[in-house]
Length: 319
Image (cartoon, rainbow, N blue to C red; front, side, top):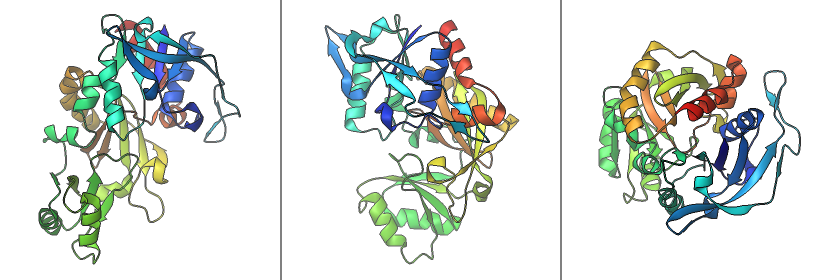
């Protein structure tokens, strides 16, 4: 197969952590051709999506003592040329959020890839439909109590009733901007004003789950089915478990509750073309649905002694 990965500049990626690198590495080792491009290098010509594609060669990571090891340099990039994306067997959209206006424009360009010739993962329409915070709200049976608002008084009333709550920017990633709100905090009004731009921008406010101290589980779904999980446990005084803010990656199993949540989501994910998804679960509740560039594969591979990339490639080859 020929696979194109739309990624952030490759020199910014961490080969020991980033799922995009794990997928490219697995594809290369399986004998597939791997190309990279960026969202800024997409265009439409003659009603077809094109990209400035460069072949890439990776030096696979090796397993050290409880961590992946990479050499420097760990990649080499060949000469880029403009090609129709339909010359690829699959295109994997793996640009990191936030979903900005240029990001949305990139998804519009990807609409001009003929799905009968080339599969785009995740589907552009699905990425547009699935804000990673808001998308979970339609699954009310498996999420904690949640509101979305920019109104300070509404937020205060929610926090006072619940005792504590977590505020999340709708466009955030990797735990950025997430706040733990308590009604007695003397900075409460200022925190809400800053987060909502004085009421102009809605935010998510979610019931605080005490189980967060035990970890924020990331479950990787492939076509709606769980294929692996990692628990991200807060460290020190930090209440967030995101690995980007220092959360420790800990081995954990996929449970029956995880499968129940996945089964609840699966019909909608398939409808929206959301094939490779990371869902976040705390205390048995779904908190987020990550569709843009979900991570966690490297940690699962290391902790469970597996290679989830093989599952993804098998699915691509047979879908």
